Image (cartoon, rainbow, N blue to C red; front, side):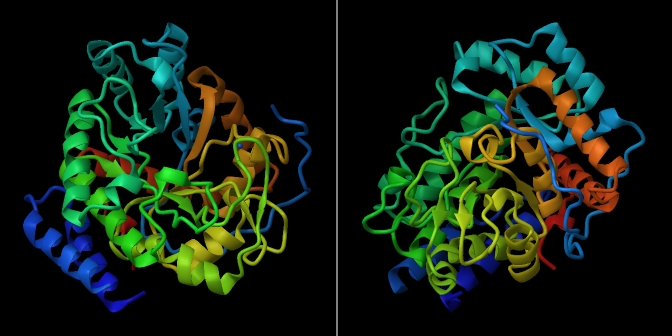
Length: 398
């Protein structure tokens, strides 16, 4: 990583080390960032292979999260409500299965007062985190104020403006009751390719990295947990993972030079969450499979080589790249085995028990190492502490 970008990343890392400490000197971060800038996818089959390749030795420093009942495995999942308030069946499932997170989508929102009440209902469970997919531009939740420009528009402006915009909208998200924002996008736009479109900050990796860190810091200023996505980058993807599995043929050297630097900056800065993509990267994994279920990409590259200790969350396991290949149920098991910690479902809260059972069966039959599940649960516990202003230093790179 270029030295100016590394310096910025390390400076920003200080604000993630002690979450409960006093506010940081925002202007100092922004001035440093600006100076650097000027210098620089219905399951067709649930059949599974007989066993799974064990994940490499974990690098996490978080205390393993043991579980004494199958219901406690619900912490591994993020699901969605069915309407604008929780049905009793959803409340019962949240309480019984200690579900890790609930993602609120546009159809769950009628107005601000209702949204605030829904998030309070979810939080009444005590542990469950509330999530939103709020990037700006075409990807933002109704009712949130103010509306925020797309990444491509923010990328034309200064790093200070990006951070300020994220902090402003983050303050409203936090006031409504959200804990985690599934943003910012760290994908580097490739000239001639339009997969990420306006969702990318630009075409220059160092420049994108600076805006990613600024947006993430703005969310943290507001008390939200940011999530950097979609690792290892959409860059030259030509297909839609919502519909199918497609292969990215970008050579490894180009991926490392162009697509990975913004993610490495996020790792070095101690950002706590990274979301995986559902693309197959031919030069990173010889087996044709989505990055979300690839041990080579998650455990090997992201954790082993790049040093990420934080929470790996999958993109939706209801997307076509998963449902049309291994299926959502098997995708849950394979993603865990590959090194992911939280499984994002487009399924309703009440469907989580069925996926929990798939995980328990995989552990019982020896397909999924119990230690891998305990590692994931330990990171999720740290994430829950972080969202509530507690200590989560075990998620920082070693």
